[in-house]
Length: 122
Figure 1: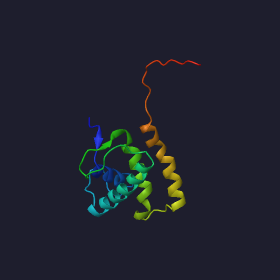
Figure 2: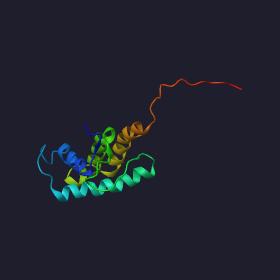
Figure 3: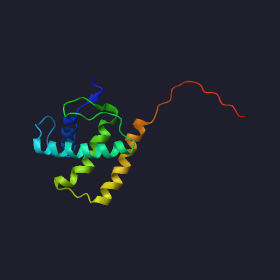
């Protein structure tokens, strides 16, 4: 099982989730380019906020961790749906983005180690 996905897989998944293409159908290159361009822009913004730790090099590089792939599909759908003729005004888009970013924050949070800790008071 793959543990990473590509930017091309992300754009295809966004289009499938928006019902712009059927599962397994070929993706329009212009539509994929639009999503991937917005992804690059948003990824830089989220990296500045400390939410992104993976690389972003090419559309075919397997770099997107599987645990954040679906939250990214949801985030990118929210970001581009207005470009596909769906109603999504800026205030609504920003509010939804903040709700969806919770999943990225959770994925970045350190897990419990299971190691015991000691506590002392001086």
